[in-house]
Image 1: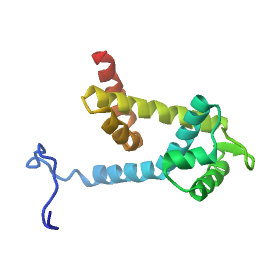
Image 2: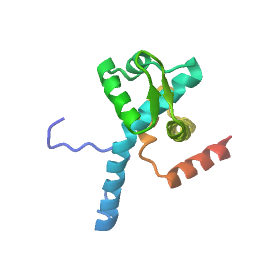
Image 3: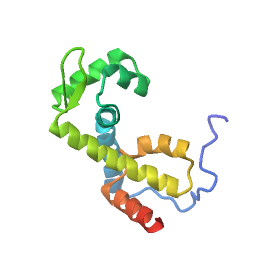
Length: 156
């Protein structure tokens, strides 16, 4: 594909699309920036919560393996999570979520599950839905999540 060829979904009708008003456009980009700021933190906290729930402990080595990053990267993030008051840990010991960390993990897990179940309800394959939900959960509004959840409940 050349640099001059634009990529659009095959069924996208772009003829009616117009730029939104400036204020709305600015809010859209601000929302995305804010989501990106917390996305990685939420992913780590959610994974730590999942590891504790399913394995009884969360170790840095397990986090590194599951996130496909180095242990040095995990160590740096653990220090950041510690500074933010989301986890506690001692050298060479498992990680524990603080009350604030537990709440963040629960909220993140709930958002993730809603998006995942919604994508599955649309007919998206499980493997694709899992990949897509991992990024989408951080970027959908509470309003959109509520509508997704209502549609999932209707379908059941």
